[in-house]
Image (cartoon, rainbow, N blue to C red):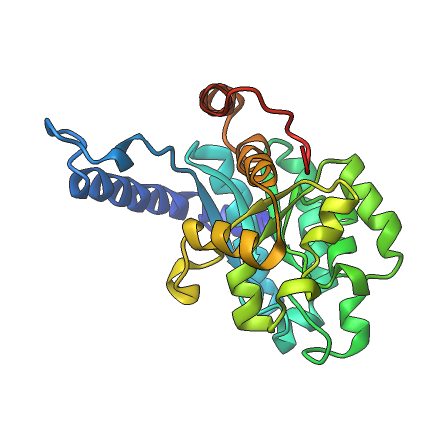
Length: 275
């Protein structure tokens, strides 16, 4: 199927995708006045892109999008990886979850430099049958080879959760924590949220907004919620902020520069939860 899609012109279609990104980035710089005498501070923000794959489509279409994600991230330096989106509890997404993981597993050796982050475990008891809570994070890590996990809310319901947490800590697989989104979509908040479970086992975490347009959130709100609802310390917030760069998919030169700038702003910093 990969050969058929490539011979049918899939790579050629991605030229238009990159051209679309050109227009988006140019519009951003124009809106912020980046070429003027008084540029907006946002002009200094480094932006990278993740290609979105729709997981609630027929499997052939999802495969084509996964392939497009691998191809685009291999040819456009602004695109640093891809993700699977759409509700994880959707019937098709649940039915084909393991199939999607095997698709990614099959293609990854052909694109060894492309990073993968997967929304996995964005589920809660009652939303899907109990067996649906037991394997999504595990297969995302062990089958698809994800470098990061988005949400990871149902980790405590995973089969052999403790060995999985230990493995994620050992392999430095970061979890993108979206507190506002998890409260609004899943009804999971406060002590029911697994943030501290991840931190206890040394799994790297970073705060995220999920979709700002849906959650009506921003990073200020996420930091505020982390302090008020989760009781994280100021040092914890600094660790999470550093993690968001350390485990980003930006190229190493860019990442090294940004980490150096962040560390200079932070001053002396241990980089461990609770310190």
